[in-house]
Image 1 (tube, rainbow, N blue to C red):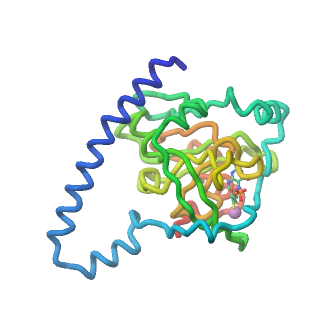
Image 2 (tube, rainbow, N blue to C red):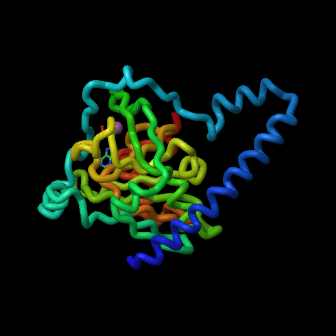
Length: 246
Ligand SMILES: Nc1nc2c(c(=O)[nH]1)N[C@H]1C(S)=C(S)[C@@H](COP(=O)(O)O)O[C@H]1N2
Ligand SMILES: [Mo]
């Protein structure tokens, strides 16, 4: 990855930051013009743009358990963990104008979001944690999606029972403000069990959507050719719902 393309990407990121503000104030004007306050309130509570609840520091779970893969489990991963993931790269690829390959340092230099949210696993447990990282929207704006892009696929370094773990979401969730590429949990670098060095937080979705050990973010037009074609590991192997909105 050439340094120049990272910089070009980040330049694009700043440029699109402005248009986003413009969009949202235009949106807000329309919103205010509407007299249908019931509908508005309802939408704010349940729409795809609604925010997941956020919690206070006092509510953080004392221990955030790991689930599924608790490590990538390869010698290369053990070595990477040992040296602070200096050579780890997160690629942003597929249907984008400017493919990116970001180091952890690049990720840390982006504007950051910190959020204290509750993780809900379908296996029947929850935990509250404080997550930090750049919004996925920043990376996607830097890479600039092609118009055909409809889904974002998250590729992971681990395999679970021999199959690569992966997940995917639509653009509503991809551009949701609480969808972040997290590098920290409770103010410290992600523990190995929780997906070091990078994992997704997609706060309007159930736990299995939050891909850990993230290596590549791919924009695609269709999920048919990815993995088993159902859009995620658990969707392929156990028929879990692809849309796991909460
Ligand atoms: N790469 C990868 N991501 C994954 C999994 C996994 O096994 N591998 N398990 C998923 C499931 S089912 C849950 S509940 C959460 C668990 O996150 P945690 O280990 O931080 O508790 O990660 C999700 N993301
Ligand atoms: Mo889960």
